[in-house]
Amino acid sequence: ILSASLCWIGLAFLLSEKKIKLQYNQRMLLALLVFIGGITFSGMAFFSGWAMARTGTVTVYSNSFETGGEIYAYQQIRKIYKKDDKQTSPINPAFVQRNTELLFVELKSGKILVLSSKDYETNKIFNALQRAMDSYKKG
Image 1 (cartoon, one colour):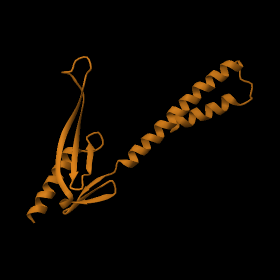
Image 2: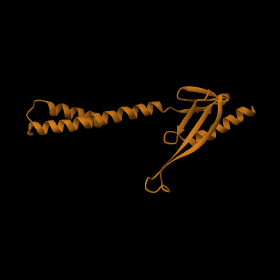
Image 3: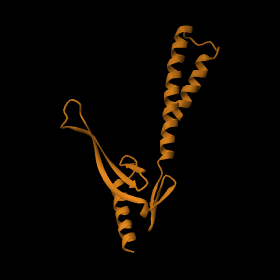
Image 4: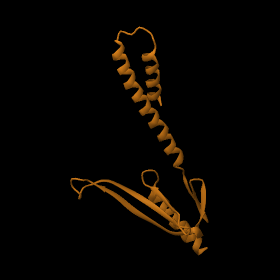
């Protein structure tokens, strides 16, 4: 946000009619570069904030769990499973560039909730859900 603010202030300064030692064309080119930087930084700040707002917490209760502002009862769940998403190198397919663990919660309604290890601690959530569902089924 600070970078975007500085870009917009710099753009206003460059476009002002004050006498700057740069020629008009140089000033306009620099203003264009600052404008592109301002748009880029503003977009990054906006979309990063939006992604953080959409990534909510996961709360496990004795008879349900909550994520994304919605509560799902354990009797709604068809199955829970984990899967590794491996991105391999285009040059050497044996080399894994990025490995992301995904936690899938499949509901009986057909809806599938996907939690990524980039945003959540999928192992802890998976274990907590398994324990809670086992005790719910027993109890």
